[in-house]
Length: 499
Picture 1 (spheres, helix red, strand yellow):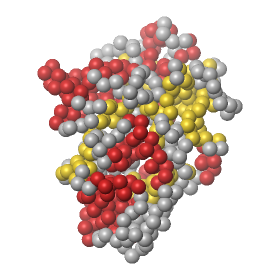
Picture 2: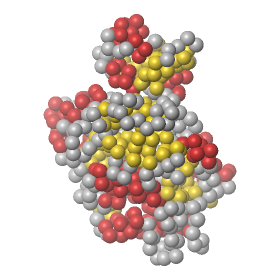
Picture 3: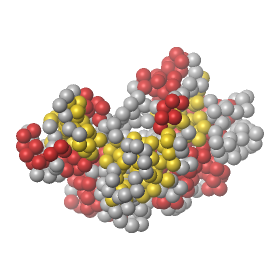
Picture 4: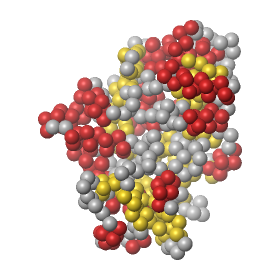
């Protein structure tokens, strides 16, 4: 036991002192404010206990100083942080609490009613952040880096979401890799608009900022006009988002007057880096954002189980559709269906990843954990190809690689071509089971206003641009595509619409 946590993240924050840490709706907060708030959470959690001993602590707190304080307070107390998403339905939240065997639920007052009722039914200890002022600073346990630190749930686009368990060592490795690759410093100021129950928002943005001694400005939720306003009025250096967010920012820019557009575009020029991830970035969005902002978006590749693995360069060429090369400290390889390493460029294979950033286990699922690894290599389930030294993602084997008549085609490649059709605003392609072909290529599209499109005309157009197996056999016109909270198209749900 000691008076100060030995965790490196907190030790670094102690050195930042009065440096600006977090800006939220309540005000501007220094690193000393964050540490004081985290100490109170720790005391609140521990009471007379010496150590939570990896007890799972589920928490629901909006983007704010309080969020970071609760997360750090759990870690200082020796617990495992399980962030919950406010927009998720109650049965999904209940599943996470049950699946992790959470012993404590911490709630912001905004979410008290449903969570208190849920906690009572599950017989778990329920705590409110508004009561934390009663707690006092206490001695904290020695928390080693190999202890479990966090459980995040996968997006569940291909199966039921699984709890991904990471240790403190895993998280530090993920942070160190990005700090090195993207050259974070204490002078950085990032705008945070991402959900805080995914690695993108937690590690890439919040924890990297706090490790670097930078400032993290947090909006309660994404709003295109609010983001553009912060671009103009805040001293930002970094912005990270998903493709859907960039699409909405482009739409808001296009609605502005010419004079307003010039102001908005100039505001982007003061930033040193803009990043896109969590879903494939359409080439058209890449080019349009470059024209509007002057920024060549840096696209990277990662997932809940590994953090980030591949990235386009901070300094150097970034090509649309490519996700770059392995990040510092990360090993990546492609393997064929016989698990043999692919050495030649241009030959597709499954991405496998190895390194200290790779997760420990799936919560309560030893068999699923064992299936996910080939010795020390984690099998991502994503197909890619290396071209001109850079990785290009072809898609998830289970949803984006379509086996039609014996030909394996990439749904992502077909989507990129379909987006160039003059009437198509957005689209998604899936393979649907078919007795004759095994799977048939099916396209769901959102049309531009006042346009129309038939399957016959789309097929005629596509035959001039795509190989025969890649031409859509079925067309579905939609007002919107089913997406998860990160903006990624939910292809199993989309497939159901065709079936």
